[in-house]
Amino acid sequence: MNSNRKINWKIYRSLLALFLVMGVLAVFTQGTFLTSRNLTNLSRQVAINGILAVGMTFVILIGGIDLSVGSVVALSGVVAGFLQVNLGLGQLNEGSQWIGTTLSISGAVFTGLLCGVFNGWLITRYRIAPFIITLGMMVIARGLALIFAKGAAISPLGDQFNELGQGYLSPLLSIFLVLGSGSVALVFQFFKKNKTASDWVAVAFTVLLTSLAVWAFQGYRGLPYPVIIFAGIALIGMVLLQKTRLGRFVLALGGNPEAAWLAGVPIRKITLGIYVVLGALAGLSGAILSARLNGALPTAGELFELDAIAAVVIGGTSLLGGIGTVRGSILGAFFIGSLNNGMSLLDVSEFYQKVIKGVIIILAVWFDTRERAPSRAVKEA
Image (tube, rainbow, N blue to C red; front, side, top):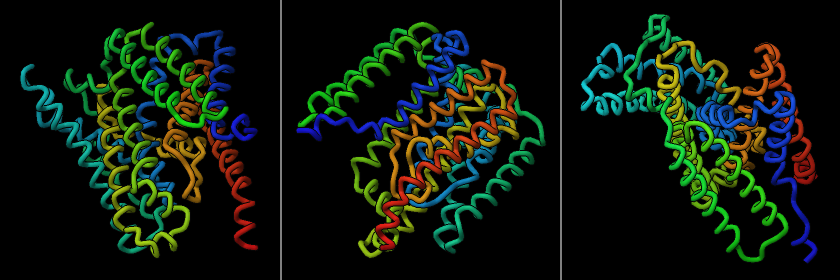
């Protein structure tokens, strides 16, 4: 009975940190941070890093790393821009523009997928450290982006393609979608058997987050399309990790690779598949970024890998693998996004922003190391 009344605040650490930083930024920006317009723009800015963070969660959970995602975003965006402008897919007549848009997005995703195949195949086939392979791919992809774009931006892109990054769902439909999603989450929480105090805290947070989302999206232009895409990918990631055999395999592989191998876990297939999926997500992010900017920049995506890794680590995923959740990474992405957005509103220099984010990553890893130290000590004993 006492255990049911005790609240495990550890599982809400990322959420509490997010609300804390949002509250502080709201005070320092005199309320500008919490306006509907800014929260909507914040969610759209977070979407790209959030998509990458979902894939990066799986990579880090198996004990890997991918330093190439930022460059792959740039290369994929350039491919989409090349198809839109150089091949004329963005200049098709109004009735055929959806074909050009579909082919451009597919080209970007396929480009990212090929980069993921390259990374995953070398890592699994020759057992080379992921750090080295993805570091090489980071340089290769950036170089290819500059070569294909001839060092300049490719623009303008087609109007329908730009809707991918600039479009909004109407405010009325946005409210319906947000309230519907929040209601479904509350139903599952209320019908959970043997509810603990932590479960009731989860209900309170769900109500608070749903109210905040309604406030943001009904007061401006509605729900941005990138956020809808991000939400769908995040939901798929959470289900795969928490409810499927693949998720159990991923956690087992990261927790103890030798035991996973002895248990018959297909290590090579899972590792290759995870890197391929992250590559495809980076390709999709590249298409969304190009659509948002109405142009493909070969220099885009700089340090996106830093933000993605930071989001995952801040969300509670261990860099040693085996421990973490997609939900935590999503909160981590909003934490990093809020920090970036708030510091921009406060006119903090980009140089100082990088220093602050670096310190936050170090602190997150330090806390993770301290928490895992007792378990390692038990194993050594």
